Length: 324
Image 1 (cartoon, rainbow, N blue to C red):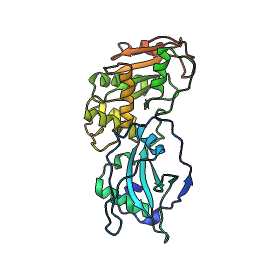
Image 2 (tube, one colour):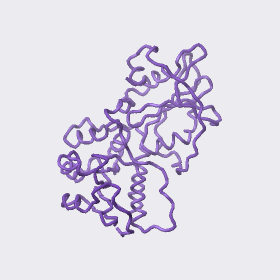
Image 3 (cartoon, rainbow, N blue to C red):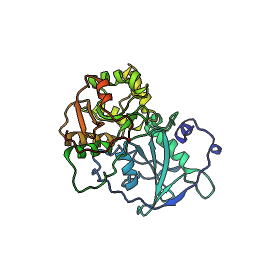
Image 4 (tube, rainbow, N blue to C red):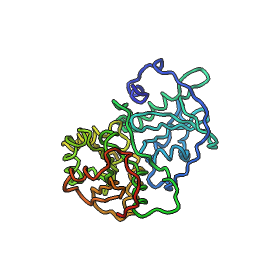
């Protein structure tokens, strides 16, 4: 049971043991987005006694990186001179505290001098203020979820063909793997409500994805507010493959629209897509067995032929500098 779930169920504090330790603030090379798509703030949370509303401080750079990768971050308020945040990605909860000057970032649970856990009360107050908005993300997955590399910079090189630059861009996008990590893989820009994306993934599901013949690394995007929010939910969900296939098979509750969800991870994927002037979904990108980078606009007509064009193992091919 997670801290968020326990706070809602008023679980005894004795269930929890925590440690707060100091770590250096990470140096983050990712470009800042200016806060346009920063998640709506939980604003301030009143401590036990009434106090003036607190202004939310700037998000620490390391947490901003998590946000750009599709993680969900909420401000817990300021207690004992420390600003606190809860961060959730792939079902994993983490708690962070920083002094007002931002000189350090601490990860763990906050206790007062009498040993009372402050973090539990902060989470409970956040739940009371924002409802159940974080609970779908705070359920640990049955197996460890794997996602793409997020806003890390591709390796530097003196020269890249357009094809290799495109392949670098999708490799370092925010993607979700469907299928075995040992299978040949493709990347695919996917809109959660795109009927052609649905048809493609349902065709691939039983024989190819669940049959361990193919891994599809979906790059969630959205062209409308509701699909952007659904794509963001996928990036943050503990078990995105299960959620997606429930959605594709008709479960209208599997992929909710949540107006307060952080969408920066999806916006980053959209920026990559738009930089290459891709305006439809699905868009499939893969490296063929001969090393060339190839693009399929729309649903592939012959999945078996596409599979035959892939290397037999994910690491069995080197770049050939092909053009899109």
